Amino acid sequence: MITDEEKRLLNLAAVEVFGTMYFTPVELLPELPAQDNWHLEAQYIKTEIGFNGPQRARLCFYFPRSLAVTIACGFLGMGPECEVEEAKILDTMREAANMMVGNLLGRLDPEGACVLGIPKAEVVADFSPASLAGGDVLALISDFGFIWALFGR
Image (cartoon, rainbow, N blue to C red; front, side, top):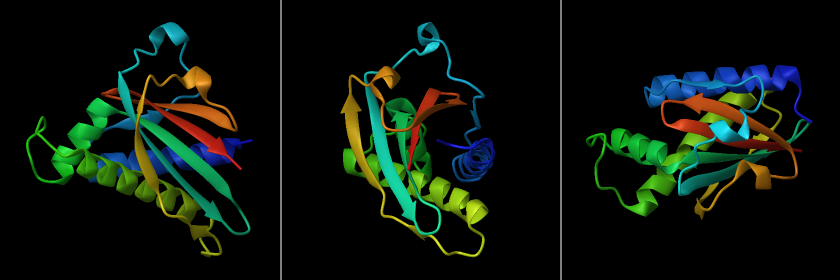
């Protein structure tokens, strides 16, 4: 189960990475939004990354496709609604997850005893937060809707 301190540090990591690298404000919500406020997109980009050592965790993030495309376009120096290949969107979101969890890990483990894994990414259709299992479900708010996260051990 995720601790309050881990939630606090995850929020700091997300705010820093998304604000600095992608100029996109995000914030971890204190509780999950009501289901009638979800406003789900047709596709999400799922990323998964973990770390091992004295502390360990696995985090999956579900980014709305609209956010992923905007971030990829900006990261590649293109316009906000550019045409971008699926592979580049997945690469960008793998890197976003890597930076966010790497930032979190630096806060959790300043001595560097833990090892960050290699991120994975895939497109997910018909996503619903109600289907998430195997950990704590979290939600971050962004200008593009909710970023869903699953924190497991």
